[in-house]
Length: 191
Length: 159
Image 1: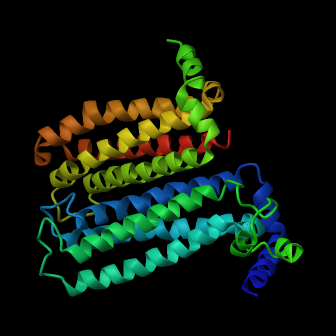
Image 2: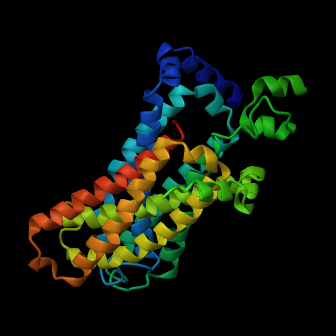
């Protein structure tokens, strides 16, 4: 049901002239993708610094909340541009992206990473003043930072693997994989 | 100096065999390359934006540079090792790719700039004794060099 709905939306986007133009453009797609990767380094770079501080691995002489607070804006600027260019990249190749198992895992990991970021931030604010100056923050904060690094690394890995066709719908795959990737037509043929 | 013999060796090395035969290994290494690029980007940006007075204005710039230098070096080592592995898969193609050489030129300039100019100047001298315009020039040069390296690296795939 959800797979059909997602595929129909993707096909609708795919029918738009702009989508085809972008996909087939000589330079525009490359520029958008380059911007996506470069702003990924801005977003993730700031996140790395914040998480490394939370792990007690750098800036140990500077209060943890100060590092997180001061790098928030550049991190968010990177994130906004990264998300916008990410949507444009999806818009250029909507059907294949919708039916990519890697893209789907990436979206799930992104939701988990964002949820973790909110929980992490709440924990940080709740504990403000109690460990802010400690070179090594408490265990729950370090676990949150480690999880953040792992989840965003997962987002990068799955983002990179979207380009590979190992589990594309046109391949011979088990039914479960067709279902997980949303290969609606292949699932129907399987049955 | 012609580096063709090195690329010919790389093309037939065990690294090339692994990179060509195991797509999964190649992707994992490629991901580490991207993550290291992000870490390097983060350390460069935080340091340079601090020198420009854009971020972390209430933390001394010397402290920012001291804390980011180690992680910059860690990222650079991972970038070079993972980059070498990826290059092995398409060594001969890269040898004849202009964008690859643009990236390598930028990378060489970046390494010289960091270890011969930026690091000695910013770690050995009190930043209050350095002309503020010199600090700004270092920051802008640094961001320009590393932006060129990252952008030309991505463009290899499109050229």
